[in-house]
Length: 219
Image (tube, rainbow, N blue to C red; front, side, top):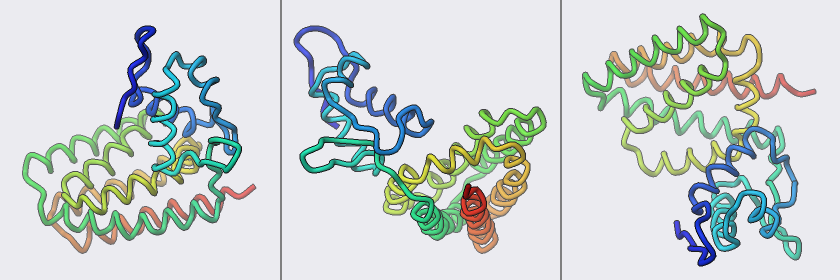
């Protein structure tokens, strides 16, 4: 990613702005179809116009922002149906990653996953949904990392970005962590036991559950 230097003084880098805007979109601070005016963003976030432009381009690649002809950029709206479809595709790809992770995992990596499992159990016990959501992200990222499937990883990142608002909301629903925790523990157990088929099936069932939860959240 290119960062444009503002000769008038220090400003947010393009990467910093990408991270700030991504969080704002995921959390709902910036809502679907909201216009993203470069000049306004530059003032609001203390960034150069050039870095705003670079950041919006990066977010459009991720599927979080879209360019509208003659109207500039806006937050991309993802329908519930599209979010469900994206989650189903992710299920297939992440099942592949879980399978490969089970084949490749080292003893040190397995111990790291078991430690994360204990941390997830603790966050659910104290009803800390924010911490559980963070552990959830770390688990999926770690399994993808262990799998060393770069093409799948890049595709999953793009897909996750597009449907992440729905999953962000689900992770914070009362009772949802207690539903997903056993699924996550089953994934960890199968990967650490080096059971490729079991790991793939556990991951598939978990993301199938996420897709169903999105369906059930229809107003």
